[in-house]
Length: 126
Length: 146
Image (tube, rainbow over all chains, first blue to last red; front, top):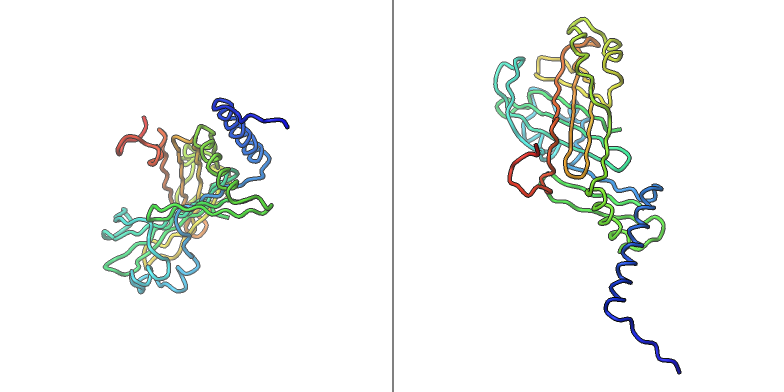
């Protein structure tokens, strides 16, 4: 009957390092050959089809906007030269990306005295 | 194998994995952590192309057409709509973007071109030429990388 000795501390450490390095190499190979796709999203994508259907510029309230588009990503104020007055501004931001591509959407909603007063959005999402 | 991570407006982050090839969840999450570390460690990625804002001076508001804009600025990466007030009609917008990140900083370059009934009507652009530091990576409070 043969007795096998357990690996000593330093040997166990070397084995662990080897396994970790092996995992790292596997991960790199997976990434390089497109086997793993990490997708990252930021924010919630608002449903822009509702902007001119469920919502009416000059009529809908900020509560209507909140109900239809959801909680804004941020808030601010706007007074561009084209504006006759200072207005409240809600911003929505959504981004989705992976190793291969990264795209986003900006939505700006303007309010005057609690009324939906205009909007601007741009999107590179497919 | 697909891993989806999301960051909500509240700042909460979450990931969920779906193993399509029978791999164990443990390996999937372990791999995800490794990959994120690799990505953050210095792999530079970029998307889109730098908007050619120098060409804007050759365009004339109220005169230049969509074809002129296409010729000068190239194909937009996205589009949009603006209706800035109740008494305005909805107008189309073209969206140009360039994003570059190297794990430590991210540069963004955005250009929005506005049209009125198919005629060039104005623009808005902003670049971050010095690299915005990822807030979760910064050890300083509130400073941007120079």
